[in-house]
Image (tube, rainbow, N blue to C red; front, side, top):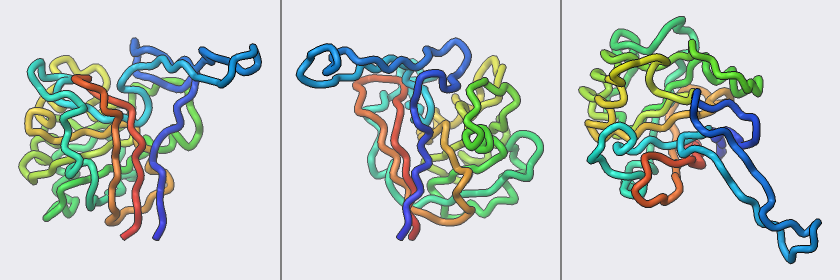
Length: 211
């Protein structure tokens, strides 16, 4: 049995979505100043690094992250290696993927190279899923999908059709995964967001375990 931690480390100066809050980690209590313990103050957006999108992120009456079912966040998943595609993930790309019987799918693309290089500058040309690809995922009956950059949707999208299509179909979206060291195949997924009441998303610790 082997574990793969596919979570991006959270640190000051890490890449975040444009106009999202940056990360600040500071000691609110400091033993170096004579306090009895160290206590870290954390400031960051809910969609920082590896995180989960809840329906409320784009649907005003959607569920918060605390209402996402654990039975969907934990269970068998399949990793697909799409590092060879030059553009976005569309219907044609997904029709070449064996999604038969798959309920959780993670897509490894060239994006994971950003995490391996420790880049701190946002890349607007990241690989994402386009609208007809999202429609294909809904048709296949998936319950959860994951991508290896900060959004499932291309940068600059105006109406956000991908988020609306996936979240509207109650598909949980994981973003910001680091799949650089993970081979294509079947695993057990463990994705645990913080239980933030009513929040639109949450950072998460996401792990794969070999079957």
